[in-house]
Length: 329
Ligand SMILES: C[S@@+](CC[C@H](N)C(=O)[O-])C[C@H]1O[C@@H](n2cnc3c(N)ncnc32)[C@H](O)[C@@H]1O
Image (cartoon, rainbow, N blue to C red; front, side, top):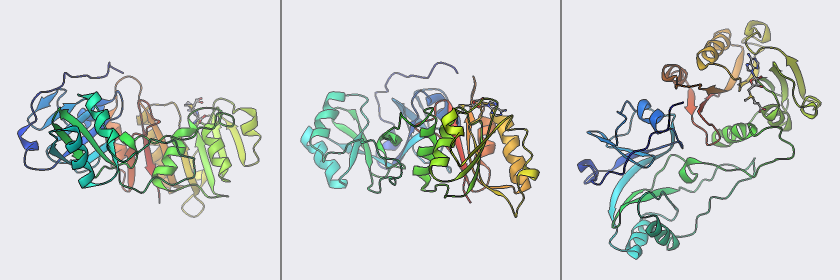
């Protein structure tokens, strides 16, 4: 992967921010280049149709489909005059209760404004609790006396980043946090007894999550699971390649598996072929797959995943240079 992009902060607010609401896309940390490419914008701090502020990309009009590389979306951003700290806090409170600051310039002043707002903490949540339902707005100071405020953000989490109380004892790897986040964001969990295929399962973080939910797990990897994971009564592990399993044998439209999971270290293009085979065979109902990019981001394959009807392509807070593709039916 190339060095992450970083731009000097622009001085002037674009004219299109003056009289109308606009949209902000917050890039996942270190992934601004990916977001700009996805938005079909040049790798520049400003252009006729955008301005970059830290990891935020402000545009006059939202794009049709939510970009996968945006960790959060500020849907109705607007400029708010903020002549003093007190008036800045009042202006925000007049709009709604809950706000999260995104400090870029004037970080100290942002902290002083935050002190005058109702307290909002980025508390780690227990897995199994739903995502927060209270709206959480985001704001930043463009300069000392100008706020950009967006009461309606796509994510209910600060900067779009859920955090969990981790289980460092039972989980064999930190990869399990990707599944916790996926299930929490979608509100859909495998049910006890459902059949899950876990492709690329070692050392067993995802398998552990699924088995702990009471699902039956058929896990495949070239490597062994941690022994205490393969010993779980819900788990069958097979040494081999996830690409070797023929979906026509694994199931059909009548006997399909409930979930296919893949966290395999493989090229996204190859994963797409595998998913298309499973879809064509009607052999699985739900899918959760990690697209792992090595070196350059394969945007064409990401677009092909995003175009699969009914599915979502997202960057989880627990993804690195990866995206998670989810199809729930
Ligand atoms: C990031 S790890 C998976 C972590 C796992 N999800 C967990 O929670 O512990 C990626 C795994 O993909 C496996 N892998 C790579 N190519 C594979 C293939 N063709 N078939 C099965 N597993 C594969 C690797 O052996 C490795 O264990």
